[in-house]
Length: 406
Image (cartoon, rainbow, N blue to C red):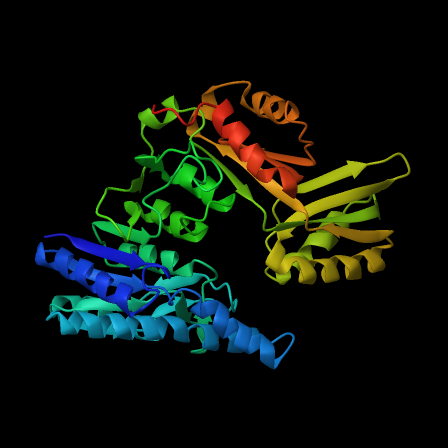
């Protein structure tokens, strides 16, 4: 008998009919002799509806109260699924974040899990119940409800799997696995059977929406095998697992793009020690994650500083940048939402030269200008005009031969 954590996203529990279908799938897994814990998201569109209500009350609602509001979506789904399971004769119990004791920091709307006290969860499973856990939520040291950010139910599921030492964590979604590119953008995209934690981590951080980045971080840290699969079929999906030598045979594993970033440029900062730190310290204090950073030095002892941030943080980031710019005597701040980041990822890039230059040439051949570049051992990312992002994905996917089976 295996211990399995199953996570179902918003489209999988979008209405009562789909929740009943999820209940039948969970019941079938249990009938095979497995012990099952289930993590659920809010019903499709519900989180946006709840946050919209909050913003209708105030232009900038208190983030603590937004978390208390948004967390109710998962509470509804977990209770409905437990009811549906009981109706099938399967004993089930819904558990909220504070009942499982998912302890987080106090970074409201994007909290991080610090610890999980799984004793209540383990007791529920030992009693023969299916534990139906509300994803996306936890509590901080003061007992306030927190949420883990968009896609946070993935992180809940993997963290639960690590805490109870589950044999696998199955992430059920509306796609049947991880693809070499977004199939909606690139018709030749191919499903990947197995991908390493490190490659999946890069893909998730670069715009792939299959798994939340922090869920992959937790899976990699604790060695949790993750199976990404479809809620609407029984076909095998993609296993996200530890690295082995076979992964390096594939130079580029996937191409991804992200249109949800904003480019901010601070003009003519004084070129002095400590100036860059003064710009980024208040951004860090505001829990704003900065992605690409480019600094140019000119002859008049000033520098232009460009960086990208998630579009959801763009307004706050620009306000902070403008405040710091005034304090240090910079000449102004501009921002650009009309950008996209396109990236290639693959473990094989470590041992093969010329991958970046090939990417640049493929883009140049289509007349696509590169505005910024960042690299790591296993990825190359370029900022381009947003209007070219789909073309860029297709060009890179075909240029690196990703449509062909390895």
